[in-house]
Amino acid sequence: MTASIPPRWVLRHPRRLLIALHVPLAAQVPVYTSLGADGSPPTGPLPAILLAAVILALQLRHSLADARGERPAGWRWSLTAVLLLTYAPIWALGLNWVSISTLTMASTLMLLRGLPRLVAAAAQLSVFAALQLVATLPTPGFSVWQIVILELYAVIVPTLFAAALAGGARLVRLVDELEAARTELAATAVGAERIRVSRDLHDLLGQSLSAISLKGDLALRLLAKDSAAAHAEIESLTGVARDALRGVRAITRDEHTVSLRAEIDGAAALLGAAGVDIRLDVADLPPLPAPAQNALAWAVREGTTNVLRHSEAGSCTLTLSRQGGRVRLEIVNDGVRGEAGRGSQQGSGLAGVAGRAEAASGSFEAGVHDGRFRLSVEVPAQGA
Image (cartoon, rainbow, N blue to C red):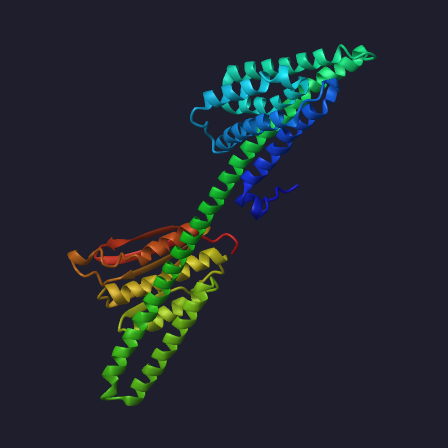
């Protein structure tokens, strides 16, 4: 069996259902008293209707407060009023009026705590059973078993109705908590999606804009001496811009995918065009599960962007190796810009690399070692 989610209108208006649960229980009592059910003499309906309306209003005040997980202000006075209005009019309205004690018992269950609640509930059930016995004994023809059954009815039915009212208030509270949890989850999902989009846009556009800037500068330098080469660079620049535009559209639909091989080849071409001596050691490129390949591919892209934007690298080494059940990517460059610039390559994009590595059950390191900046990502190769 699977748990079903309540309909949306129930989540929006649970208190309406709670009120609807109370009204029939209160409305039936004036009917009993005015008709003289159970052999009691009939009475005029107006006093019973007015008293039942007052008790219903007080009980709803208690129930709605309990649905909020609290007790209303002055609850001792309102509970006392409900008890008096329940039991004092019995001598005037007849024994049928005791049926209103269903609401009174619900107030007792909601407002009292611990032993006083048990004692008060037991006392009300005893009064109800005693009054039922008083109404039954004068009736000729009743056997002992019929009297026992009526007494059981006098104990079980009010208990069930009172428990239903108290349970209804608790259910409203749970529905409110469920709605609050759904709202919080929705806000969390929106926040997570914003982080994903901003991270992917940063990682995608960082390299793309660096490539556009690089190719634009190169085209300007070539215009005076080699217009054909400059034209080729401009065409390549527009191709990079179109790819970036497609990537942005795919990211907004969460459809953007990256290829580790394509990123490595692109990094080599881009760094080579920037005059960086690039050395690749990726001959044994292993097949990887999607999360691992995604983490490594984005690491290559961000590492390349860091070299272009935040270093003065003359050489860069990109190594991909398998060590046991894990695959390790290292990107090392010699472009550290002095002591003041040691942290310049550790931009916000590396936080995205670290997040993707963690999502793939991997690890991430970045920092300066022996005058060279090293970015390292290690992910498990299970599923390869």
